[in-house]
Image (cartoon, rainbow, N blue to C red):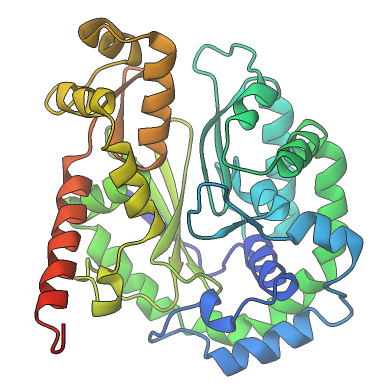
Length: 366
C-alpha cells in the first residue's frame, strides 16, 4: 500500500468547522483534544476571533448554512447544511479551498440524480451513486432521516440546487479561509513529525486493516493508497474520506492524537446516545434474527428477506438503520454489497456496559 503525506490540511473543512463553532457558540474545547500538536483553547479563541472578524453570528444567511440542528433520535452532535455541503460526497480532498469546491461541484454534476443516502451523521449525509446508475428518489430518502421537516426541505433544496448554494457558502467564508491560511501555518508545521509516526503505524498492515474497518464499517480489499493530512479543528482521532471504489483513502488526522488504539479513558466508558440507539435496535426480535443470520455469512437484503421470510421493505429499512449505527459491516466484493454482523462492535459495547456496572459497584457510597 502506498502512503503519501500532505503537510497542509483541507482549509475549506477547517473553515467550515470554525465558523460552525462560532455561529453556534460552541466551547473551543469541542474543536480539538489535548495532544502534542494541538492548538490550546485560548489560542483557538484568538484564531477564531481574528478569522471570523466581520461575521455576525445572527446574520440570516450564516444562520441558514451554519445553524446546528439537533437530531430527532436524540443522538449526539449537530447537523448543519454547511457541513453537509462539504462532507457529503468528498471523495477527494484538496488543501486549496477553491480546488476542493470545484471537485465537489464537478462530482455533484457528474452524479446528479443517482446519489443514494447511505447514512446520516453529525457531519452530513454519506451519499454514494447507485451501483447501477439508477435514478434515486432523493426526497423519499431524506424524508426518512431523523431530521426536522424544515431541515429536510432545506436539505433537498441545497442538494438539488447545489450549483447555486455552494458559491454562496464560499462567498460567505472566503475571508475566513484567507485568514486561516496564515493563522494556522505555525501550528501545521508542528504536525510533520506526528504525521510521520502515523505513516510508520499504518505501514503495519494489521494496524491499517483494523483502522479501516473501524472507521468505515466496510470490509473490502484494503485500499491501494492512503493519503494523510493534518487536521487542526477536529476533536476525534480521524475523519476518513474513501473513494467510491475504496481504492483510495483520504484520512484527516487530528493534531492531538498519537498513533495507536488507546484503551478508553474513564470518562469514555459512559454510554453514548449511539450506544442506547444500538440497544434499542437489539430489542426487536426480527432484527435479532437478522443479526444471527448474518453473523457468519454475509448476505444481501433480499437473501435475508427470503431466509427469514420477512417483508423486503422492512428488511431494507432495518439493514439501513443497523448500517447507520455500524451494527452491520458492509462487504464489497466484485461490485456487490453484502452485510454481516459487526461482532466486534457488539463485544465492545457489552464490555463497556460491564465496565460501567463494575465501576459503579466499586464506587464508595453506592
